[in-house]
View 1 (cartoon, helix red, strand yellow):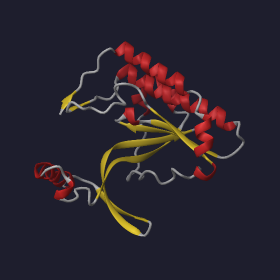
View 2 (tube, one colour):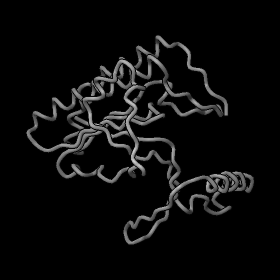
View 3 (tube, helix red, strand yellow):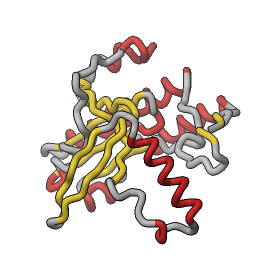
View 4 (cartoon, one colour):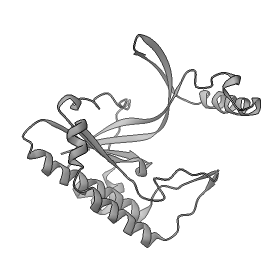
Amino acid sequence: MKIQKIRGQKRRSKNIQDWIDTNLIYNKSYFFMNNRDNCEVLVHPWCDISIINSTIPEPRRKNRIKIIAGLLDIYESWKTELDSLAKDYYLKIWLFEPHISKSQVVCAIDDKLHFYDNTFHQTNPPKSFGFKSYGELEDRIKQYQWKPFEHEMTLEDDHLGKPEDYRNLKDYIEIKKWLDKKLKKPHRTFTLIETGIERTFNAFPQGTIWIGGR
């Protein structure tokens, strides 16, 4: 898999700032209709899906720091708004490492207050937050409490399906080879029961999700 080169770093920096400015105030109509909302890092090219058989590298150096600072800005702005509601709320930053571009700010109230309580699996053993790796943001990030959770790619046990589910036998064989190779790597298996049906999943580690708030 080739690594796609990111060009126009100054333009990327402006795009990050535009994303921050657009999301400092949460979407109240959507939030109160659904009792939850989130703000993802919707900045080109990191929010894109690669269609040329290449990997989009994670933001680095100044752009990485700017995105993280933006998450903090958005969190703190939303917190001021939510404090005025005079009710309990869920508000956290989900900081993905090393996949910073997947990070987001998440909030919820009322019947969705505990919606995210069991979204992620806690790391075992616990990890220590690497404050030093955040450079100029170190002191600011230390104002938050952070807990580590596993960032996992989850595949259902019957992910492969049947040969007749595919366009041709070649596609089925390629996916089967990929899945067989994947299942040889370290992962955990768990089951969920939904509407009386038990489903088995395999979860593969991708990194760490640091969930933080003030």
